[in-house]
Amino acid sequence: MISTAPSQLPDHQRIVITGVGIASPNGNSLREFREALLEGRSGVSDYEIRYVGKTLAGICNFEVSRYQTRKDLRRGTRAGSVGVYASNEAVVDSGLDWPNVDRSRVGVYLGVTEHGNVETENEIYELKGYDYDTSFWSHHHNPRTVANNPAGEVALNMGITGPHYTIGAACAAGNAGLIQGAQMLRLDECDVAICGGVSESIHTFGIFASFKSQGALAWHENPALASRPFDVDRNGIVVAEGGGVFVAERLSDAKARGAKIYGELAAYAMNTDATDFVLPNAERQAECVRLALQRGGFAPDDIDIVSTHATGTGAGDAQECAALRAVFGDCEHTYFNNTKSYIGHAMGAAGSLELAGNLLAFDDGVCHPTLNVDNLDEECRLPNLVLNQPREVGNVDLILNNSFGMLGINSVVIIQRFRQ
Image 1 (tube, rainbow, N blue to C red):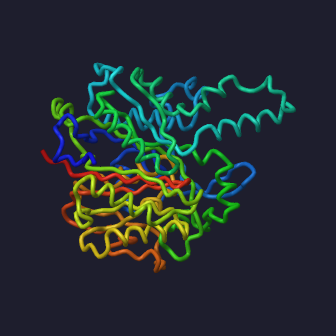
Image 2 (image 1 turned 180 degrees about the horizontal axis):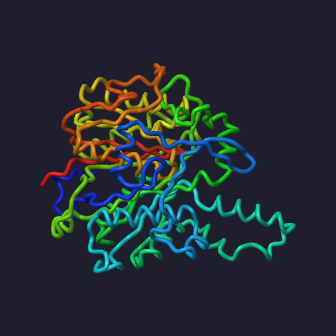
Image 3 (image 1 turned 90 degrees about the vertical axis):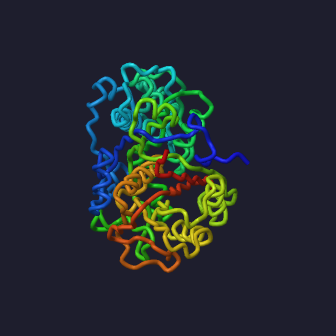
């Protein structure tokens, strides 16, 4: 097995994060997002969507016109806009001399849960008003709905001529985008990887209707209290939109330009349950975590913070916690938290947003909590599960980020505090 441990790799194979772009329901920059997590500010609010009616969602409110014209917005998609905003913000944050960057050596790798549902639903809804006469069908529909659209809109907007594509990895997609970017950098297919995940999920009524039919759509009179991973009184998922995009580079290139470094990709792993369409498999999840640890050369108690995937469903939360107990046992110095309790489930962007929200723990030594846990489900009990209030944990060197999805796809990313 080829190890991804940074200590075993030369600088041109070590991958670092040098920029972060955020579009989230409770913050549109890394600093703003981190402050919301530490201050307990929810991004969930009332929402209404056709056919389903009143519900709740994590809704982004970013400045769409910062990087796009009205024509861009008219022709494109919401997922594209989220990606364009977060990608441009990540590049600005990275300090790259963008006007002089060789765009043929930049790659765009964005994870998505689904794409095209919103646009197709909207077209059919509008077509109903024309007695389903398809001559009124938008000629923009095909480029809006092709699977590579979100990454393609970013490439068009930013003049990137290197490779671009989306990674369909369900709710593991945010991690998968970062992993793909790292692999392409190591293969020398690009010098800069714009990578992570995006989601426009709240704009499709189908996702709300489907979760509702499963009895898995969260509701609470107070929207801020609706997303309740690990809590006995949880009643499902809060759907959210958002984007978390990283600029990733080889360490040799980052050092050459004196870039700031948020962290280093220490290890990663992906596997598949192969057991059910939607029900998770704790054994396979534990195997994925162990594989990432093995590849990085880490013991479980080396990990300082574990960012959980927990969505707020009984089976999902319990199975992941069983997997974590199997791996981490009674590790005294490993802390566990969850970000969906603030913003809901951002689907394709979940993994990248949740990782981003924990990155600044390398600087401040604080583990942000899981909100809304009033009555802990005993099946979700973990040592050092941080609940309701931030916890000062001291020196943070390793963050492990879980991100799992339907059809049994599992992903784990480990980020290490950068050291020369």
